[in-house]
Image (cartoon, rainbow, N blue to C red):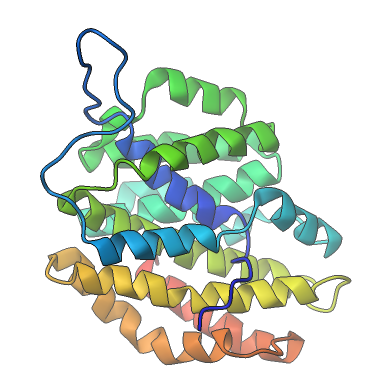
Length: 285
């Protein structure tokens, strides 16, 4: 049974929210001269079980405020070295790499914004815009919305509120099978990157005060692998989703062991780091 404790760090919510951000402006239609709808109508609807997996991911995402309180209480500081370099975007040659990379950058962006690092956050926003354009979803970067995000990047609370609103709209837009395959790659990339960042951050102060909650969150994050895996299973006939499913399968046992550990703690951290690092190196590079 999936444990309903929060998944570690607010970076996953940004990764999922970014998925929605890319879709909210792609084709909203006006009726009778009125305002544009905040969703795109499509005949190609996603399966109900896929919708449920996305919903379960959302339910188990922590509130940004709670995550930040835990990180602050554990004396975990910002370290850009744990993030992907924004310049890495130039090395992504396939849609597979770009979709996963876009999700990973969403986690990196969230981490930078959460720690009030506007310069780094803006770098990630810029590269994400380019990747979105390459994937054919650049129209979602509405100039006004992007401008407001940049203006609020040094205000974590305001920044996250904006992304939360984008996420709400995203639920009305993840209806196309073609889109949701790309979205699934992005969610997986964000999930992997956020796990890696969180584990590396915890490793800087594994015995620090108030770390017990973070260890529990990492366990819940690993249990959430089931939903990511199910999303990939639903679209395994898509070449990219099938490839990612194959590459993530060898990590399934280790992630389940971490997720099912009810007493996860500092003694488990070396094995967790080994798994998170190997997974990130394999999928994201």
